[in-house]
Length: 360
Image 1 (cartoon, rainbow, N blue to C red):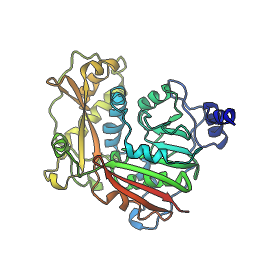
Image 2 (cartoon, rainbow, N blue to C red):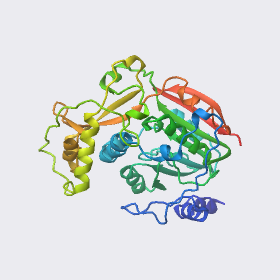
Image 3 (tube, rainbow, N blue to C red):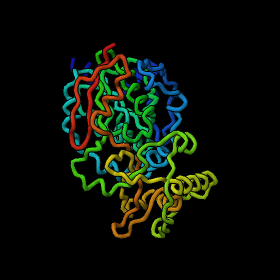
Image 4 (cartoon, helix red, strand yellow):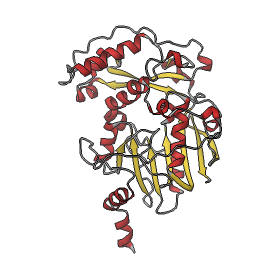
């Protein structure tokens, strides 16, 4: 029995399970080319409330603010970010440890994979939108792939449990947040559980908020540039960073276009003065100069307006987009999903958290 248990826990078994069920394609090589074509078996979610109905095109088309201030930023800071993400939150650890032996856990937005394998008696598969973070997970031997939280590449009812830790607050519209929850519910079995945590508007250390840049409180559709970018205020001219080398590929036409698009987005940014009811922010990440030089891409980020320079702290500063959640907001997003119930909700370490059970 011990030999059989070890065999079932092996990487080969997970690969077999994944390929046989035709729901994901594990990423194994350094270029992250899938072993087969990703063809998610995504079924339309059943929604009761008309307020929660969203066009699939609107939901799945990634807004520019997420591309630039979530995807590109995490790809740029991944090694440094990963080095700071090692402590496990006790509530998340308790949830994973409570799962029955043999459970399959899907971690949507797994980051550097710190929760993958936390319960040695369970199987874990992780996904994240950042290929740089996924490479870190893969190098650690985890079963992972690059995927979007609003379009998970798993067949319906596959997992026994799913977690989404500090992910939904990076989605810039309510439609996309609802869709991400629907996807988490879809991919677990009846009776399966979903744990979701998000940053809270009600931060325990209020001084932190003073370091964040407030954005406009609500984005009406007419204010979005293309499929989802808020207007923004003029930004100071970026300073050159001569100590950090240019990436060899930074002179390509596509990179120039990305730089121009970034400057346009920053020039159009609109800041909300009423911080009391504020929920949209840019939250800075300070990447030390010596860490920025590893990839050699920070000079381009400075030139494009994606990052700024802080000589006092000796860091390249990247802004990350956040929508912080008010009390009751997270569970309210589930009210139109007719096959799920909230079994627990709590506040922990400046995060709002809910546990959902799929009931049908």
